[in-house]
Every structure is written in structure tokens, then in C-alpha cells.
Length: 453
Image: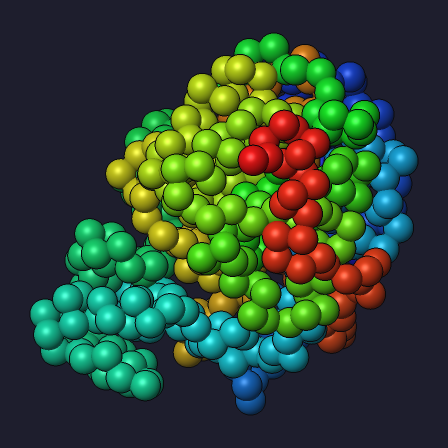
């Protein structure tokens, strides 16, 4: 059967995204979103570059469960429908491999392409662990009752300890410590406590929307474009901001002078790709004056994108619900959502995907799907929700949980046939310009909104 004769998973996913938004937002009835040739999930995965990143060094490239690349293609269809005049001509499923292409990453399962995440066996299943920061490695003695000490290469000792442990027990202990370690779910088992708390008997969705007040008109004092304030770092939130800038929004990225976006230490090409065309503001957080300026700037925006856990904003004195009630929409991108017992659990793209079961498998066990797959999935879907909210007369608190978006993608129909596809190598678009330096536009933005000294 030719791919053109099959149900296009991306188009069906796009229709579901629109249906979800239409339940609350004032969107018009959608016409046909099916404007591209049909592709199977395996063909989408191969075209994205993520397939070349999935598998073991000496093994074949693998296709994961579900249809994550088709989910991205479907979300991009909705973005084009919501903003037909946007700059979308160079955007497609290849964005899944852009970070890896810019950084020169390759597949190395059961480790992630970036190397900071690994899937490791326990007595009764698998866990996935991210150790990207020294403070994560420093938690290993507490997790292992002192049996594994921090080391330049902690993985062998940690893997040796895990083989005698129950996966659920290790994951529960890691949550108490704030370590990004998850248990890989088993197909057919009941929802875990986090999904139960957030969704009950309902199927988890890709977004949760909470209505606020009447949306204020305007944004920038001298600009009629919607003003989007991006407080997020790394990939998911900045990707959402990048896509909204492509739709025609004005984007101002806010960083902390003391803790700038960690992506600045990575690939210059990738940072430029996501941030070219944006204004850059830096605050000396958590100084009281800086926190006050942040609150006032957030209140002047049409939409804020935040990639931190809920308590981070509270520590800065930012009441998200109050800002939304006053007319600013807010996208909250988290690992597991703003509510439930795992709300404050740290998460990165690979471990959030593993918690959703969004992995590829071979005879030796699971390997990560693509490169930090939950990050771009969350970023593209957050942009869809944010752009839809900007068309509504109300403000909205928009919850996008990386694990939940990955779970939806993992549950999409996958190919039942052996994929006869040739994987494309990851590629990266040419940035439209250079990202501006840290804090380059602080004074001008503060002066525009009357927040200067």
C-alpha cells in the first residue's frame, strides 16, 4: 500500500489539536489542514534526522513507538493555519535534529546523543537518568545509600548498583532528592500517581488551559505586534518563542545576569537560530529591584513563556495566576505539569520522554528516541497553544508538560509494517542573523515601558 493511500497521522493529529483548542478558545471552524503529501510515521521519522540519532553506535537506526515526527508535522500544519502570513517556508520535521546537527552529535544508545542521559536496567525493568549538572552527580551517594560516590565517570558504578534495585523504588527515592531519574513505564499498566492526580480517568492531553481575565490590547508601547516575553532557556521554551517570532510576534528574551541561558555555552549556530531577531534583556535576579521590574514587564506582555518549575516564579515574587487574571497569557512549560505530586520534579528532554515511554527498542532493550525529543515536541505544541491564545479575547494560563506531550506522541498510531526508509542525516537551518549579546537591549526595553532608573 502506498503512503498516499494511508491515513496521514500528522493531519489527524493536527485536527485533534485544533479540536482541543476550539473547546475553549474562539477559533473558527478549521478547513482542510491536509495540504501536503501523506507520509507514514516512519517516513516522517526518517526525514526528520532523528532516526539517524536513534539506536546503538554499531547497530541499525531505529523507529520509536508512536509517531513523534508526525506529531511535529501536524503541529506545524496548525501553526501555518493560525498564521498564514508567518515565515514557515523552511520549517518542517527536520527541526527535531537541528540541535544535534549544530553540535555534531550522533547516536550512542543506550546513552543519549548528548551523553548526559542513559537508560539502565534494574531487577524489574528500566530507569532513565539524566546527569547533566555536577549537582546531579553529587546526589548519587544520597540515592545509593553511599554506595556510589561522585566520579569523573559515575555511570559504571551507578549501573552496577541499579541492577539489584527495583525501578519504582529508585524512581521514588530520586524524586525526593530532586534527581531527574524516571522509571520506564510498562505497556498496559495503570496510570502513575502523577497522571492520576492530573487527569483521573481521562486520557492525558497535550495541553491544559485555565481561563484568566480579559486580554489587554497592545503590548509594546510603539509596536502593534503581540509582545512575547520569553523567560525560558535551553530548547523547548526558546523554540516556542522562535516559532512565535516567525508568526509575526515581537519577542523579548529575559535572562538572569547570574545564570544566563545555558545554551549560550553550546553551539553558536543553534543559539543564533533560536534567538536571532529577538531583543535581549538581563536582570540581576533575585535582587528585589530586578524582581519588581520582571513582574511589571511580564504584566505588560501579551504572552509570557516560562520554562521553570512553579516554585521558581514564586521565589521571584511573580504570581503567575495573578498576572494571567490581569490579562497576560502565560505558557508554563514543565516536565510534569504545575499540579500533582511530581510538579516540582526536574526534567530534561530525554528523561521526560522516557517517563512517557517514548523510546525505541531492540533485542538489548530501550534506547533514546532522537535527541532530547520531549524538548522540541513541547516547544512546537506550546507555540500552537500560545498563538491560539493570542487570537482569543481572554488571557490564559497554558500548561504544557513535556512528559504529557511525549505521551500523546507515543500513543499515536505507528507503522505496523517494517519501515523501508532511508534515514536522512540531521541538518540545521541557516540562522537569519546573530543573537544579540546578553542584556544588549535591557536599557531600551526598560525605558520603553517606563521601568528604567
